[in-house]
Length: 455
Ligand code: HEM
Image 1 (tube, protein in one colour):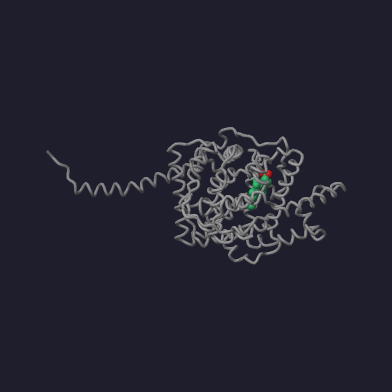
Image 2 (image 1 turned 45 degrees about the vertical axis):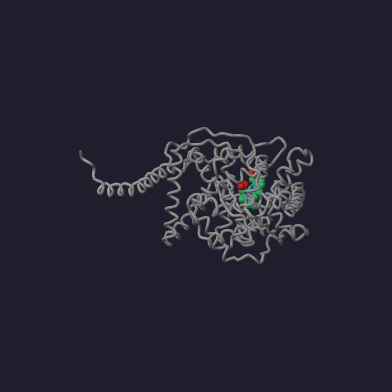
C-alpha cells in the first residue's frame, strides 16, 4: 500500500503542545480511519489453527503447550502456518542490518530521558488516551494495579530482547521469537474479544473504537515507541537527538512493525514517520472514561515505587509538562503547585546536563551506554517477578463481566527519602544560582557606575 499525498494551503498545526508543519506526507483523518477497521488477520487465522492443535493435545492429556512452540513444530504441515512462518522470517529488502544495529543502542544511550518520556507521554499521554487501545486494556484487566508492575517489566523485557544485540532481533534470535510471541498474544486477545462479541454484540463498539488491536492503534503504538520519543518526548525534556540516531532508531522499529504484522510503509523515512505520528495525534478523538481509569491505575503503580520513590505530584507535573494541561485535565490529573514545577525543571536540568556531557565527550557516551544496558538487563531480567523470563502467555483474558476499575495502593511504604526529588531540588537550586550569578555581577558592575546621590 502506498501513502497517498495531500497538500494544504494553511499548513501550521499544533497538537498537545507539539507544533508542526503539515506536509504532503501527512495523512488526514479520512485516510487514517479505515485503518481502524483493519487488523492482523493472518495472525488471527494462525491463532485459530494453533488453538485447535492445542485443544487436541490437551485432550490427549498434555499440559498446555506454549503457542510459539506449537507453531514451530507445525508450521510445515499447514499452509496458513507456513505463510505466517515464512512472512515473519523473511527479511524485506529495505532492512539494513548495520543501521538497525546502530539504532539498537538508542534506548540505552539516553535511558533516563527515554524512560521518562515513554512513561509520561507514551504510556500516559498517548497509549492510555487512545480510545481503541484503552477499550481493549480496560477489558483485559492488564491495568489492574497488582498485576501492572509485572506487565510493565514484561514490556521492558521484550524491549531488551529486541535491542540487546543484532543476532537477537534477526530471524531465529531471542528478540525475534519474543516479537512473534507478542504478535500471537495480540491475536489471542483479539480472538477472545471477537468471540465474546459473537454472543454479545454490545460488548465492544467496533464503529466507535475500531476492531480490537487494529492497524491504526498498532501504528500509534509503534510511534509511541520510536517516533514520539525523539520528536516529542525528548525535546520537551530539553534534549534534541542527532538526526542520524533518530533514523537508526526508527529503522529498528520499522522492522519490529514488520514482524508484528503492522503496516511499515508509514515508517519508510524519518519524514514520513514524523508525519504519521503527527497525523495520528491530530486525528485521535482524545481520552475516554476508560483512559482516566488506566491513567489513574498506572500512576498508582509507579508512584512511591521502591528505590526511586517518586511522588504522585511530580509524576502529574511531568505529564502536564510533556503533554499539556488540557490533556492532563481530560485524564483527570490534579495540578500540583510551583514547588513540583521547580522540581521537574531541576530534573530536566540533570537530564540535559548528562546529555550534553555525552555529546561533548565520546568516552562518557560509551561508558553511560554500556552501564545503562548492564543496569537495565540486570534489573529487568534478574527481577524475581519475571522468574527467569516471560514467554508472553495470554494471562489477562477478557470476559463479559471483567472491566478494570479505579484502584489505589496504600499511601507510604517506600519511606520518606525521595532520591529523584532531592537531586532535582539541588539541580533546580544550582540552576537558580547560575541564572542569578550573572544578574548579581551585572548589578555590581552597574552600581559602580551609578553613584548614590548624597544630599
Ligand atoms: C504495534 C506495536 C505494539 C507493540 C510493540 C506492543 C508490545 C507489546 C508487548 C511487548 C506485550 C507483552 C508485554 C506486556 O504484557 O506488556 C504486549 C502485550 C499486549 N498488548 Fe501490545 N504492543 C503493540 C500494540 C498494541 C496495541 C495497538 C494494542 C491495543 C490495545 C495492544 C494490546 C496489548 C495487550 C492487550 C497485551 C496483553 C497484555 C494485557 O492483557 O494486558 N498492543 N504488547
